[in-house]
Image 1 (cartoon, one colour):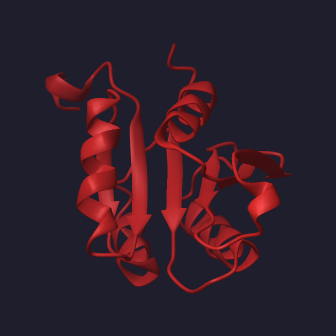
Image 2 (cartoon, rainbow, N blue to C red):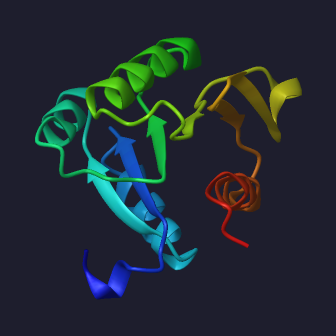
Image 3 (cartoon, rainbow, N blue to C red):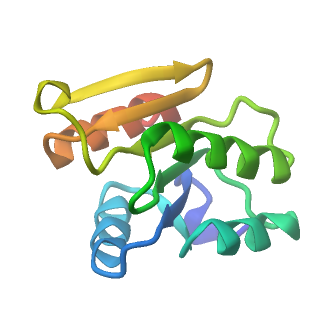
Length: 133
């Protein structure tokens, strides 16, 4: 493992949007995470297929898909990566009802859907799930 990243939790970010990806990656790095990026589901599957992607959390945003569909894809990626099933999976919902703004919904034992209101909400959820205090 790279010494520079030894004490940083690793997030496996799967983000399709070319405009959002670099901003989100930079913010995650600024929050103190090491970030591994995949461009889409296919890229993520290729990356985890070789067994070299070890992450404390999977963070996903797949454009145009429902949060439930993204959860299903994320669970498949987590299983394919041979993670123990306890690796948290967080799906960022891009479109949702206004009354969900600012909520984090537990969607499985280790799965979450976040309806982001601001960057602090994401930072707090990730810190809680990676036990980064």
